[in-house]
Amino acid sequence: MSTEGRRWIFADQLGEHFLDAADQPVLLIESRAVLRRRKFHRQKAHLVLSALRHRAAELGDRAAFIRSDTYSEALARVREPLTVCRPTSHTAADFVAGLPNVTVLEPRGFASTEAEFARWAQERRRGRLLMEDFYRDARRRLDVLMEGDEPVGGRWNLDTENRQPPPPGGMDALSPWRPTEDEIDEQVRHDLSRWERDGDMAFVGRDAPRAFPATRAEALAALEDFTTHRLPRFGPHQDAMLADDPVMAHSLLSAALNLGLLGPMECVRAAEAAYLAARAPLASVEGYIRQVIGWRDYIWHLYWHLGPSYREENRLAAELRPPEWFRELDAGSVQARCLSWALEQVRDHAFTHHIVRLMVLGNYALQRGFHPGDMADWFHRCFVDGYDWVMIPNVVGMSQYADGGTLATKPYAAGGAYINRMSDFCGECRYRPTERTGEAACPFTAGYWWFLARNEHRLKGNHRVAVQLKNLHRLSDIDEVCARERDRGTDPP
Image (cartoon, rainbow, N blue to C red; front, side, top):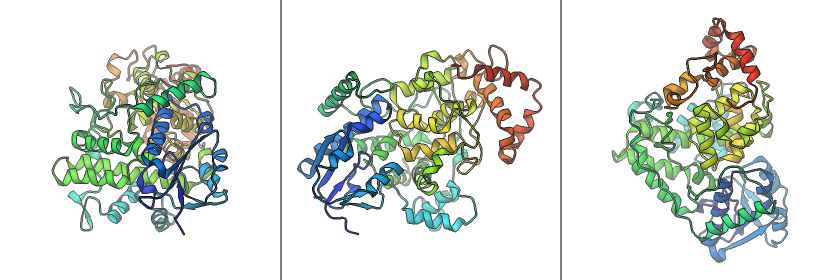
């Protein structure tokens, strides 16, 4: 298939690896309709527009940069054949597939190809698809942290070393690299404010200086900063949370990866090089690499493997619409310290790390029975690294267990004891993690038991929650717990 001619690149395909030649002409389209379609976080809208406009400026005369209301309107002005790497959502892929004069190429930006995933999945036949198996296959194929046919250190997965609670006194990790805004950012901020003022679109969250890379040079600087200063401390406490340190030792590279400013294998090789040079321990390096060529690639391929109907999965019959205080990031209305803090982080930064997403925000939604599709949309809109392919499997499948176990082997529901062990939130909270009833009852602890009671008949066949379901019937106050939580409804805790 020919790849010649002008390459149309979307705003999440901004790297050189989406082009085939150093002088290839490019089409970029800035569509205002995309921003009207959803109520995005203001900082996410800023980052995407800034990255798109920075790429257009870098390409100069090589780029035809069209700002229009819709993609169709812009494409009507293009009189030459186009090629495009398949976009990252079902909707966009269907759109480009139906366009005349546009040749759709295989997708890029991931470490494993669709053919490699299909081969791996076919080899499982009737067996369960597990991320760990896919990750090991990828390690072998890509020769990452390998000594011949064996993993470096003799073990594939060092996750047991990487589940430690926060260290006393904090992480002692340097603050992350941050960009400096320029004239393009100033114009983006002006345009967003004008469109919002004119009623053309609305946003959620607060505006703030751009905190994530919008150019290739910035992304490389952020990668170097992470591998040098925070990767060595990343592993052991990657599942921990600290109120005064929302970044801890996390990479903050997901947004740059999902914009296409970094390739996954260059992140992997940079981390691997840090280990080989004895600049970072194996547990930290393996943990990070697993996130990139294991989980990130696995989620991407599952999005396509499971198909468009997967977003409708709702095996736990969770029908509540997320309440306004949750949707609008009203952290001040929430008294539960961990949840208030998490909403505040999203409101102010359009970002939290993965454990806050899964075990605070997602855990609360799972316990309350928020609709999984609504939650996937909320994460998509409110996070700088949120895209359809990311959030549908991560939220519907993992966080909300709405597929009944296709992706995750158990629901990621947990009570206040987990949050207390893995964070410093509970000490100053008005609720007590050990209490399920009374005025000091932790909404996560009570909510956990209410979730199990409400879904017992749906979870009976899952051996990973068998002990918890058995313990459910040993609680003398379970009827009181369920009644209180049912009465709480969607009120802020």
